[in-house]
Amino acid sequence: MFKKILIANRGEIALRIICACKELGIPTVAVYSEADRYSLHVRFADEAVCIGPPRSTESYLNIATIISAAEITGAEAIHPGYGFLAENPKFAEVCETSNLTFIGPTPEVIQLMGDKNAARRRMAELNLPILPGSEVVATVGDAQREAEKIGFPVMIKASAGGGGRGMRVARTAGELPHLFETARNEAQAAFGCPDVYLEKCIEKPRHIEFQVLGDHTGKVVHLGERECTIQRRHQKIVEESPSSQVDEKLRRETGAKVVRALQEIGYTSAGTVEFLMDENRQLYFLEMNTRIQVEHPVTEMVTGLDLVKLQIQIAAGASLPMEEETVALRGHAIECRINAENPHTFAPSAGKITGFHVPGGIGVRVDTAAYSECVIPPYYDSLIAKLIVHGHDRNEAIQRMKRALDMFIVEGISTSIPVQQKIMADPDFCAGDFDTGFLSRFSTNASGRP
Image (tube, rainbow, N blue to C red; front, top):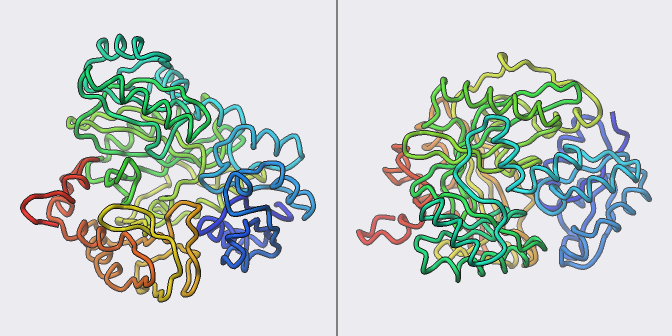
């Protein structure tokens, strides 16, 4: 096992990794920007190194500084968490050349799956169904021709993208030119690459993803699916496992396809294969995230497995301790991402938290690095906590989430809690009748229903 791990991240995921390392008996090194000097991940790590000014380009995205911090502290491995450098193949490669273990898949696999268009082609070769789409298109004229072949509406998507950035839906030929240029500009600003491709747009999709683990022996297992359909601006806000739309037959068949595909590409570590589901319950490969996901706790709650510990053990050379047939999904779990944002406009809400109380009780988990009197800086993602509940079935999980949200107090800033309270009370959500457009309709319903 590693003698020391550096955590190249911040906030709740850095603290989550510290918890896993403490249980494994591994000392940790936190890195932090000047804005995070008083963060809990800094306090609870065994060592901490300041890596630069508040802006992430000068701190959490600064590869040279992070590698230097690992070298001066004697760390043997780096856990990237999610976001920042977690899916950066160059960072994984630099770790290797610096004799540091990158806790994640190989640079080659990250590169392959990080290029969304290349990933689509490879997964199609490995018998995962994909939506009709194009290669990278460089001009409006090319985009128009490809869109006519695919048929409107089409989704314009950043090839190096994620998190809803560089993504636009063109419903007619007339609006395609403007949206094409907007998506390219946004992709360039967000990812340093303007490349986009087109994909057939499913009008009322559900977002289903499969959690996987792979080790260095070539063994891959899947841990069932998560329902991530409730989104705002293509970013998830509520997740659950299992999905009410995936029965045992579909889970088994899709899971088997996912496992075979990832064995073929030599996948190691934790990862997530994402699909869109149409109204006929047909799944289409969307993309793969080669890292731990924000929503990994719902899978942990229904399987009883610690995914972060398993990531670390796999990176240290251990084999997966379970067989596919021994993985069982027990009960139902739901996660609400508690974001520091205006619940009506979703605009970020930075500032000092003046009052903070997290709910507890049976079946309730809170992953957070926030505390009373801490300052939420304006430089990073708005996520401040993840509220996860587990119940015997979906109905019990919803009721448990309702009471947990009611008991979650955050004062001094605005949060997404009011929106999530309304979601949990909505009859369509409770009945499992929703798609990715749910929240936009939900917030503008003329009848006054929340």
